[in-house]
Amino acid sequence: MKKLIIAASLSSILGLFSCKKETVTSTSPEEIVTGKPTSPSPPPSILQWQRCLGTSTDEFGNAVAKTSDGYFVAGTTGAAGSHDVIVTKIDLNGNPGWISPVIVGGSATDEAYGVVKTPDGGCLVAGVSSSIDGDFNGLNKGGSDVLLIKLSPSGSKEWVKTIGGSGGDRANALITTSDNGYALTGYTTSTDGDVVPSEVNGTARVWLVKFTITNEGPVIQWQKTIGDPDNISRHGYSLAQAANGGFIIAGTVYTDPDPDIWIINTDNAGIVNWTKRISSGTSADVAFGVTTSTDGYLVTGYLSYSNLVVAKLKLDGSDDWQKTFSAGSATGSIRGRSVISTSDGDIIVGTTNSRNGAIIASKGSDDLFVLRLNDATGDMIGTPYVLGGNKSDAGYHVIPTDGGYVVVGNTYSNNADVSGNHGGSDMWAVKFKF
Image (cartoon, rainbow, N blue to C red; front, side):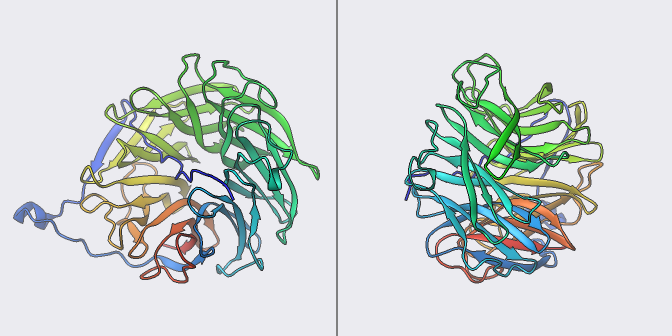
């Protein structure tokens, strides 16, 4: 089994420099009069079904993709410090689609952070691998590599490949592109192998790779490393394709003493059009989610370690609006992990453990939250929804589906909204509808 750091990939923050900002708190009229905090009435449940996916050890669901007859869920499995890639399939009602999940790994760190369906009904998985044995025997290029795994519709391993160089390489996001290819982003410190650096400075740069796949493995069409010659590490955490064929990446620039959100817009060949830096100016800021809307881009994550941020940028990168949802105290946090723009509004999912902020963890220690905003103004639609049990629950990735939405994450709970936990942390798939 392998040593691994299971990182809840940094959430996204947006401290846009000059955009319209609003901090949302949970003050009620009664609280204003009496000075005593009140508990708002919970909104009606949006939960349609939920499934715990896993074993008696710990699993974390990091990505989900819809196919014609269900969903692929990808993440990591294993005791803390010893994780492998896990991929499973569920049907449209959350029931098991495969007899057993697919496990891919070696004796070091192997994790999955992206999954997409493929035209044959199977799936492609992307992430990071440091193993030199097991499924990665003879594949390691040095340090950590980007892993790519192709699975058939029935869950058989068609191929396992790595791309990268002799340094550290990682994929944090994977998408299908408009030309029926694929793109991924993450970071690289390599200057050799599959990496052609545009900034040779020995620090981590955002890595954007456009590729196709064959029966034998991936074929890189082009790749770009994006950074500044200032020896400051930069990581990409989320990726989307714009209507003009270009790409939008949200991630982090690791400035001293605290990181800032970094957003990159490129053309369809990976050439940078513009970049934008977002900072609270006080503490760590990270972006984990990005998507396109009808007239711009949406980013989510957190500011100052703890406060949920959602920002909308115009197509040229200028500010449209920004909303910050306060965690209410230094010990609480509300962190955005994924965002999509839909006919129901802009939908953000993530994790809250706030006790007196804008989105209160009313179920347990940490809860999955669903927030809906007006795309034109950023104003909240209705009230936030909180799902979970009496232990720790999280949402990492949300997608639209027939008649609602599916979010995956993890849960340690086995009560309230959660049932069927196999022990420890399970991958958690939730279908909801407004």
